[in-house]
Length: 455
Image: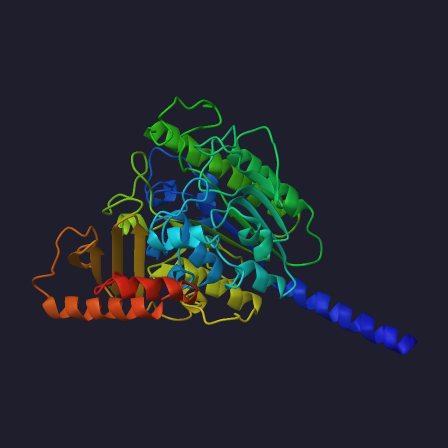
């Protein structure tokens, strides 16, 4: 009996020792922040010393991309490690009050299936399988109802807003509905949302003990409405109208909370074994953000809608002050996190573990990646193959060579028909491949009713 107890204790100690060696993961996500809106990415009117420190002490990305030019689809790809199209109905930001904004999403909403289903791959759930404590603090935007909630997707703790935006002080959406929740229950808190999220993250970190942890902090800043800690009220009809000065104050308020979270890592003695990641969910939105010198804004498939500032810090892994020009998407971050944690995906990922490239052990390599965004009758697509990029804006095609034309000013569609055809074929094949199984009945009905169905 004694020997059996000793054996169990030895196994338990070995398991604890193994989990202690796993890296903690701190994933920080901005909302609608321009790719040029950090000091370290060229902003002269916005001060972001804390966020910039992540890149200074680690690695900065010069060709990081979001998986979509809007909130819901990019977050779907980040949490699943797969193209959001495979889920179905998640190619556009969910509307206020759980509204679907294009045909597939409307079809799912009518059947009470609108959201990220738990049958999908979940980063949090897979990390829990490796012994991680998990928390999500901030904006969710992947489903309003309990079956699509953060807790259902493997997060032990959740505090934040369920929808896409909220008054920073009233914590209500544009329709007046309260959307601040904690572990499935509506809650009331006093204060500015960005600061509440920072405080909640610091408190959660303070409770960590022996187990490795994964903390996902998707700020809703600097998404509209345009409010700073000093600007409480929003005049009627101005929810999406803001000036650069207010926007800068929102980014700086977020930077302050990132600093508080990074300071807490020092308090709990977790700096050396924590991988810190910062990026935005899509390109900056008009009228206040800047994606200069890139073309386009949020909701477009031009570089300005898809590129993001991204930085990582992991002592002993990333060389301080380093940078990479590797084309890297959000689902690549997911794949790399799972690899670092030794977690095996429960289904094939579309993202690629690029840690060997990011750390300089392997050279930068060309990629072939795809985008598709849907809203109402608009369908915007793009494929990047090496340095060639084909865009399709509801039927209008353009072809760019990004190395020689990073601003996407000169389409070569007519001059390079063979390249355009090749990319067009790749895009068509990809669209067939990522068809969502849960939309099989939707596709069948549509194809029966239309001789030329739109993908």
